[in-house]
Length: 109
Image (cartoon, rainbow, N blue to C red; front, side):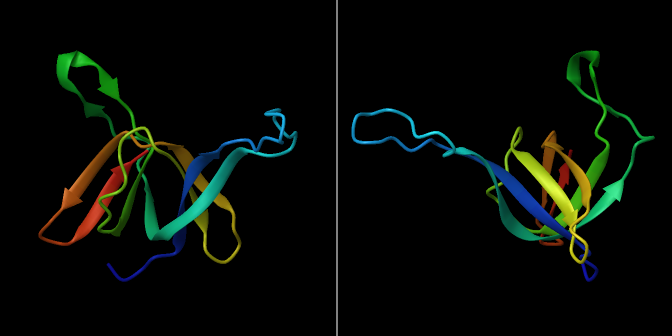
């Protein structure tokens, strides 16, 4: 995979800090985006995947990236452009494919 025009971020919940009395300090904690790697985002809004038991899963994008074993389903991710930081896609991971022959990962959001 040679072209990687996007950046992949993972949303992490940061716990709130507490003072010496155990009270939560306002303005601390919340969500934080952590940079993972460069990737390539594909738009596939017209395709439909079928799951077991007849339910339909309709992912809107899939992402190609170098092999990563730390991504699991229901992780919240964000994809942005490298140069302009424009948001290209976000949401939970619906499906993870680890392609061992080509040594890269595909994730569906």
